[in-house]
Image (cartoon, rainbow, N blue to C red; front, side, top):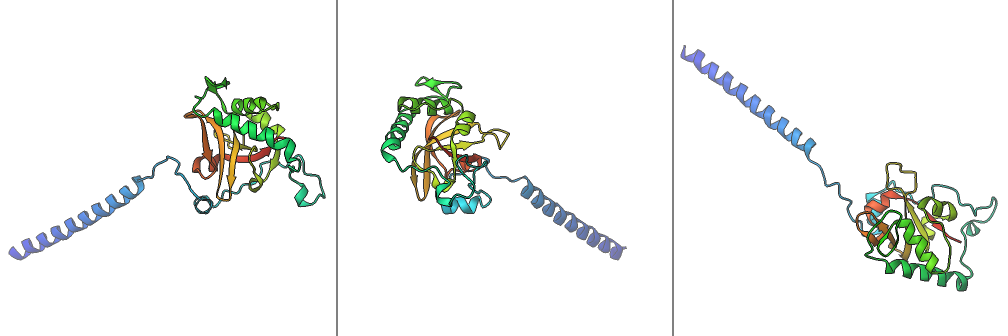
Amino acid sequence: MMLLSSLSRKRIFKFNLKRIFFFILTSILLLGNLSCKSSKPRIVTTKKEAAKRYPDRVYTPSRESKTEPVGQPIASKTPSRVDEEKTAPVLNDAVETALSYQGTRYKYGGSTRSGMDCSGLIHVSFKEAGKSVPRTSSSLYSAASTIDFNQVEKGDLLFFATGKNKTRVNHVGLVVKTTPAEISFVHSTTSRGVIVSTMNEGYWLNAYLSAGRLE
């Protein structure tokens, strides 16, 4: 009887060990599946880091440039700014005007210092600089000549798709500064109003669709 009792205790002990081991293993797997990272966009500070974090992001236009004649050399495919004396003052004035609206709250359809939306900011800034441009993001997109991302300069426009439809332009920004490592643009956001952002920020990097130049 004692021998049988001893064998029973050993079997129970082994069975309990198996149950404990199985419970620990299951817990580890469940914790691993339930853990997640923050959904808040992380700020990417350099082009190199952006390339590593978003290897699939290729800055190519979502449409063909309207100024691209067949058979022309590559250098002539992008609208040039040979006449700097005519274009630079208007672009500089538009940029400076847009920057002066920083801190203005967002207002859909707004185009004053009491409230401004993204296309309203572009429209008003160019208007005060002496140039008439379309009022909406989609019409600005249609009016601008498409350029490659690596050809973006101060005064150009950046178009984004921030809605559910990732191919439809619904946001626009005005480039205020370009360096080898960063492109800054001013725009009006629904959450923070008129601010300056950069293309190194993960959110705008993912929402980017195309760059354009107003002639």
